[in-house]
Structure formats: C-alpha cells, structure tokens
Image 1: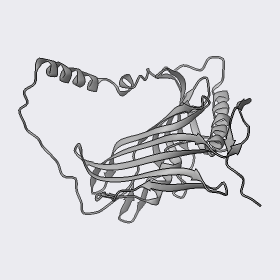
Image 2: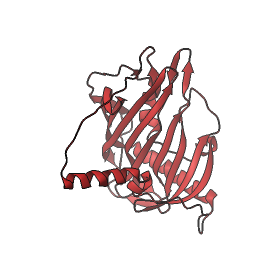
Image 3: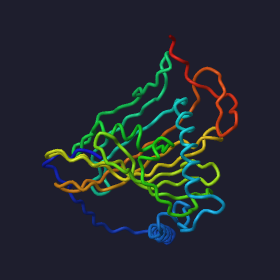
Image 4: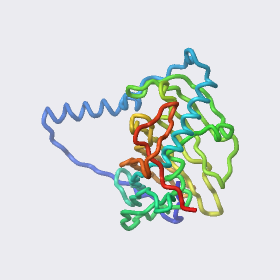
Length: 291
C-alpha cells in the first residue's frame, strides 16, 4: 500500500507477567480463546462455500444481471452525499506506532460538481511508511469497488459457487484484471453477489499493481469491504477494513486500515429515478450546471 522509508526496522516487543483471575474470568478467557480458534467465516456468520452450479439461471446471466445493477448503483451513488472516515495505522506487535487519519465530506458545489472536503485531519504520525497518490485513489475508488457492464470485458471472472453471508444467499466469484497497468488501479480478489438483488454485497482482495520504482516500494494490503442496503434499494459500501503484513525488502510492516462510509443522503432537486424498472419516491439528483 505504501512506500517503505528505508533504514527503519520493526522493533519486537515482549511482555512477561503473572496474572491472577477469578474462576469467572478464567472461563471468559477460555471462551475467548476458543472463539479465536474458529474459522473466520464462523465468527462472521459466513457459511461454507458450496461448489454447486446456480439453479434456474446461468452463470453468464448472473454476471450480466449484476453488472447491469452495478451500473445503476454507480449512477445512483453519484447522486448521494456522504461522509468517509479514513484511518491507516502501522503496528509494532499490537501497538499502534503511527497513524494517518482524514475525515472527508463528499458533497456538491452550487454548480452540481462533486466535491471532497477534509473535515478533520490531525498530524500524520506515520514514520515507517508514507501515503501516496495511489493510496488516496484506492480509498476513493477501488476499496468501494463497483463492477459495471462497461468494465466486465477488462476482467477474468470465475464462478466459485454459493455461500451464506449472514442472512443473505450469495453467488461467489473470483475476479482479476486481464491486463495490469501501473497507470490504472484495479481490483483483484473475490466478490459476493446477492442472489435476489444481484448486487455486490461484499468484496475481498487488493488493489493492483504493487509498484516498484528504484529503491522505493509502493505496496498495498488485502482488504474487505462490506455493503449495506440504503433506501431499501441500493447496496452501498459502509465499512472497509484491512490488517495485513506488507513484505518490503527491508522488512515487514503490519498495516491496519479502517474506513467508514456514513450519512448517505440523496442530493439536489426533486426528480424521479428508475431503478430495476421501479420508480423511487422522493429521489433526487444534483442540479445541472447552468449554461
């Protein structure tokens, strides 16, 4: 994700102590330890991946339908204002030793042009890595990944099966760019598509490519983005997280990313939006720039 500052290494930490606990505390600790040994999907309400073909619909039709829905969602999201909180941390063991944070407000100006303003930006305390323009682009465009009809030809798409995600039944696909271009940031990983709404509800993967230029390395972590339904129609990204070790030549750096998307609101003058053949009440769009 980030450029490694040369000459700096990660320090190890050790802790030795004697702790007395009550029987109740001991049982709690045992329970927590047991939960920690469970597979990740068992802790998140994620079912096992069932490698079966879809029933009553072809894989190609699923791809066509979710790409069309994603295109409609992309247009709709461009008509929403929202807030985005971005936190990027480096960790020494489990201790945060550097942090970058910015809170953004995504809105429109008086001409209907989309704007991003920074509401909160404390001093950047990162020392072992540095933020880059690619990081900012990924936070805006790749982590809240959208795969539309126009972009389908640019990706290899492999159907894996079906999986339960909380209360949703989903189709699961692995996707990867057909061509890697350092000037175009793309997503590589896995997507979960709801089998009723045919929209992406979860993504897991990373931004590509990693960039190596001389002595500098610009590496990017694997992340998960979750979506939630907004206005009972759209599945909007609401939470992105990453906890990954980036393998620089000079040593590993553990990265944690926490991004929250909140306060989605339709913006602009009254109008009617058609989504999946249905009219949405009280839908809005940004005002057009005056001629």
